[in-house]
Length: 127
Image 1 (tube, rainbow, N blue to C red):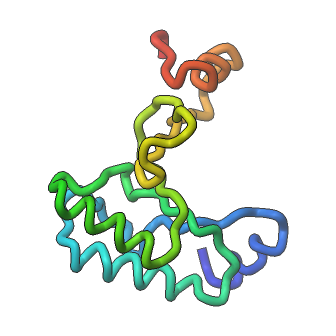
Image 2 (image 1 turned 120 degrees about the vertical axis):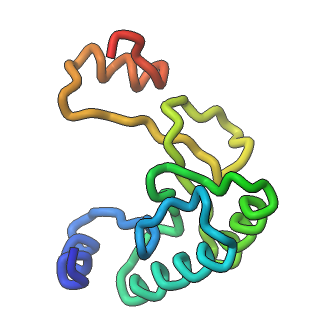
């Protein structure tokens, strides 16, 4: 989307969050690459109202625990309040880790009963 389209959306009651700059999976990026990507993403949205929420590209977090821990410190530095991954499970409050909230994968081809099962249980065994 262009900057003009994002600005227009932000004025039409659409909430905009951060989804990275280069859209590379964070799974195997170095800490330096992650910080650069987050920095560029935030700078690119500097004049556009956005929520302090991050959605991991491809739903992937770093596989290295130390990198993952340091990445979360970067998120705090940029004032993110939570980050979303793909997990197809419901989140239980209070959140164990606000930087590892799970998203439900919702498909536009679901029937209403399938959609209801996904919302209720996070997974639908018949999908």
